[in-house]
Image: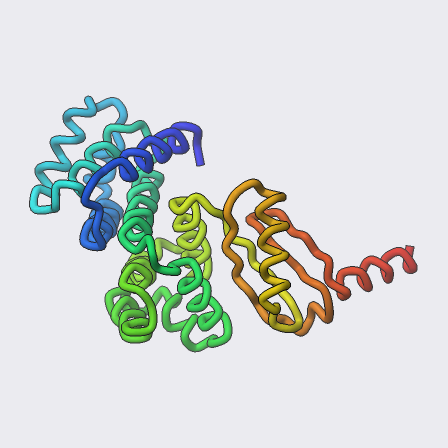
Length: 262
């Protein structure tokens, strides 16, 4: 991600958070905008052309997305007025704004946990992963499949996020899409996600101690995603973004074997 995109995304996300009246419909409209802009090289080029006046780019938004709600048009206009490193970054940015809007609309829902649970279902079901990730399948049908699987099982925000992402994969793997979405939702809620691998389910006391420790270490709220992993043997393996804390017995044994071999 270029520095221009980083700044543009930060400014656009701040504008979204400040906007009143963000609903699940706003999120749906932003996902639609990301798809339409991504599918049209002419449109994405016009909206990401930093040589064109910001007012002109906002005018394109008004012309193309005039039927959208006022919050959607405001957020889109702000996004295209920023300077992005590339047209692809603009599309990714609008998609992130859609995920953030869904997080705002579903603030009381456990969206990260629901996305994580679905990612585990995908990981454990190769046929489902192939059905959702195949380049040969119809993307609209993939979205409908996700809606059928999640409807009534998760929040409306999670259904919208996951079904929208599989409809517009843009050469990305399904689990990659889900992982990114979970991180974005957490960022919108100003917390981080820690994925914990253990051989046995954590007790409530263990979970509380772990949360307290991680929140003290990282200085922010933490959401735990728990994975039962027999390969861990004992102890815990914790991953927060690129940071890995491996206190598992299997890791200690591997380290010991390495020392003995050396």
